[in-house]
Image (tube, rainbow, N blue to C red):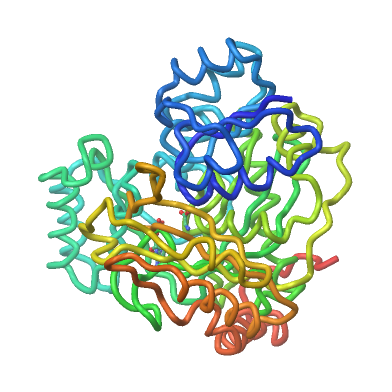
Length: 451
Ligand code: AMP
Ligand code: GLY
């Protein structure tokens, strides 16, 4: 089968790396791809949001499956166009993608189906939002731009002054674009530990993937501004079976049912961002695609051929698949970023040491913001590489990832040195948050049967 992966980041390199190993993959293309995807796929001169270009290529080449990586083409309806032309596609249509594309819509769905989430108000006028915030007695409050904002649309505000400036920036100045700032959601601040779960679905069957932990903030010790993700590890020792079961019963299964009851035929992966709180797991956000760099961890631990699962999701036959096998070892992914990220950063710097890094035992270097240039590889994004390792234990996995990272150089490279470094503290925090409810029965909500 011919397969096309849409996108150009680390997630897409990871997907291409994994799909290229499939016995069913006869040819693999990436639109537009990056300096890493060219090693395992044919890069196409088609932009990730060029729906007509992707459609034309698929028809000409007889592509049997399209895997859409990023949210933009999904929200733009690329999957609908492909399916209408009879081309199987992994990724929801525009109706399903709205769960990520509109925070207000996602909150409505959560509320309508009684899925646990932070309390919220939606505002379409800045004056009303500010009146509400000026009268607020409880702080912090969270202000969220409604539309896609490349991870920049969430403001945790300590007081009314900060919150009103966020409203001005989003709704009056439209700093995140016209569409993103047409409405805002003002949400209760949730205290707890964050985690994410991924569920592949065809709208009926659900395949919950192994837990992965991202590191969102740019600075060590979780400081500084949020990024797309500075590192990742899996499995997550802090999320014991009991916690995972609770997440599955209270959030994942109800979310997939909710999507179906909304009349959405969701074929792809639902990525649920959660806060584990004293009153159980609560949804922070829905995304409708694999996370980046979470995908880089998932593909390393997914031991089976991934392509048949993606195809089964696209074709609606997921229930016929056996549960996949997972590599029990630890994987750590360290993002090598360009100085300045998540703000402005230089591009076009020559990268060296990639071959030496890949020689470190069980290391794979996934490219994110790189581009081929005159036979060399240069930086082209803020998150440049994801140096991914595997080992029997977390310590060795970390040592390998950083040993490989240190072999790579370009001017202005940086990383967080503490990826996977908070495992024990996190474990204790999650146990304190979730254990309290389960063990003492203090919570107000009924406890679901834990199977
Ligand atoms: P989102 O894009 O909605 O996941 O928000 C980005 C980040 O903001 C999350 O990963 C959290 O760290 C934080 N965040 C979002 N909503 C809340 C909330 N209600 N309470 C606390 N933190 C939040
Ligand atoms: N790593 C978070 C995301 O992909 O949105």
